[in-house]
Length: 111
Image (cartoon, rainbow, N blue to C red; front, side, top):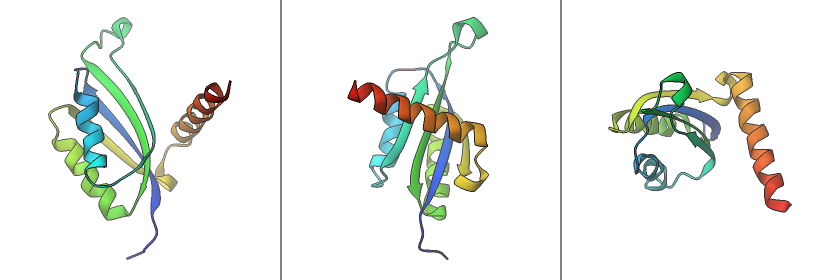
């Protein structure tokens, strides 16, 4: 077993209800995991998908801890689907989008 943490990307399909984001965040805070990024949005009315949301988050953790977190997330009533990716398994486009959004948000803070 390695003693090195890795960057993980988790993509969630969720309900689009008040309090669901807090329930998801509590899974991490209750286990002492600091989120690197957290981006979410509600349903897309144009696609007829008003009841689902999407959340993309990144964090650093050991592999076993990430697998545990993903199992706990999947057990939440708020979560319909969990997709977990290790940094080397993450689709390049998803990681690039996450990094672009992180830089954009950081730039808006300084302006």
